[in-house]
Image (cartoon, rainbow, N blue to C red; front, top):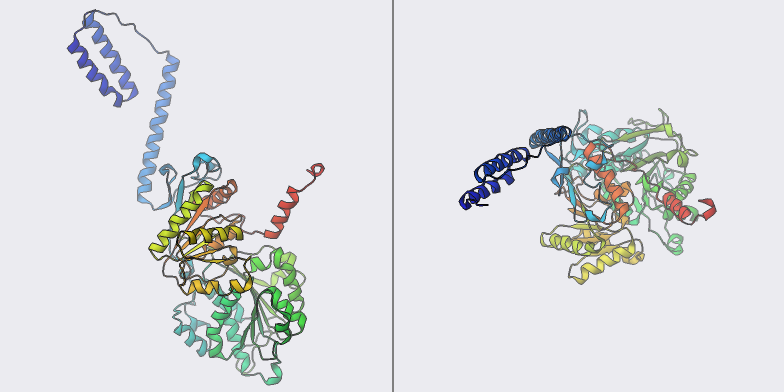
Length: 568
């Protein structure tokens, strides 16, 4: 068969351009070219027809593809006009402000497939999209500290510390405490909860002093007791309180921490005490030794109440409360006029936390009516801080060492104070040694360390002795980490409540930078936590299952693991 080579080459060039054309147009052009080729070469080309049913299916499929493309184009145009909320490595999972998400379609989550090892290397970031909610004002009449009728000495100290305006939770809590009500105060981390109860308590103590005699103030009988779960947190609260006590003539005593020797209690002197700050076990030892009495106590504060009312502390808290007379204050129990000093029958109970405790009924029902509490909370409770970006990285467990070294070196190069959280003390020591071997100076702190070694570790970090701080959850609650700009979860926590507390080490009121949080996901159980967080971010909703009774959950896991075969 004689074929014109020039003609064939021309046809070959035309055929090469067909690749970029639509499939329907391509098939039509092929058919035309084949017929032209057959006419010029006198070769009979067989005609292949498509069954009508199959042709209809092809047309329907093509219409669906065009319809999806049109919808996606419309979404893209909408997204260009709205802020990006979640930025993903796979851009098809990006989420924009105003975009809807259904929890019944979990495949839309960027982390949906992270249980599979093939997802290693993926990552996404929940971006900051608002200012610190603790500083945002809503239609509230009280805006300044002067509006609460605090004494001049407190106001002078507040001004000296450059506190211009009370935060949202402070505005809502001051009046209730001054009126002698039992209060549950729950607000996001770093919102100023410590001053929300310290300032009104000191105001009430100051009002009583002018009308008290030496007989009214027996030694070692405090008017206010503040309980905290760790010695580091107790020391911090005492330091904050001491900035105000001296100017008001209020005497504060910080009790020693866990492992206090008996002789220290034995030689504890007799002196006038207005406020005692302590951890639960230490306070109980002083009560049992007779060195402290709760006869005059009018204010009991459980700071980090979600931890103190957990099963791990609840028995000790119950014993402490048995030493105190806690009754519901009546309308006549608080007198604040100049003629009659403030007098309260019983003890006012204040529960302070970044999560709302749900075990109140079972723990406090023998001491106080739950209905007597005034519940004060903010709109951002149990939500991700909107001014702090959260990055999640899906890694193989062998990649964590390289990644933590990379981030630590970046922090040192840019002078970024960083906290690295680990779930176990052994892991904490390992990360500390890993960084140290690579020339990265860091400070380590965990519960396994001897008390003498732990002493001053956090203070050294606060005083800029190092920019890298490796720790466990002993440092996740309450500590005022204003200088921290980066939190790294080397191990993701097991519970949402712990994630809230860890991420709350950045973006606090008074911090210079909003900071950011980076988390490594390596295990399948990590993914469930990330699903919860990402779902809440896409729905702009509260995080689920925030309350975590750690001791009870651990007990249930152990019982399930060692259950007899006949019981399963």
